[in-house]
Length: 107
Figure 1 (cartoon, one colour):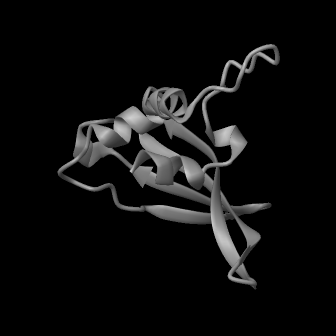
Figure 2: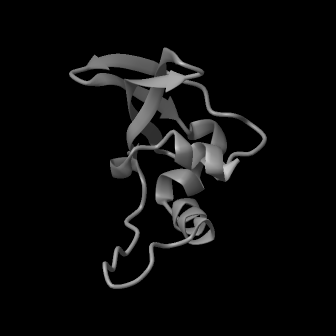
């Protein structure tokens, strides 16, 4: 569900769009393709039969740092996610959503 993954990702967690202010912004297909090519995303998609499990969650100044080892997927790296809450309005009510601000691989 590529669109869902992109929807919960903040601008710093998404690949650069090659923003050329003279042309139109990239379409959804181009954004999904760039997202799929990110090394952290490729590492997770290489593990379709053994979903990664959270190993550690630490408090950060603006939210939480989540560490997910990928050794069950054959990778020596861990996926690191920086997540933070944000308030949004749904059906006229304030709700807390979680936004992935940074996604990276940690050796």
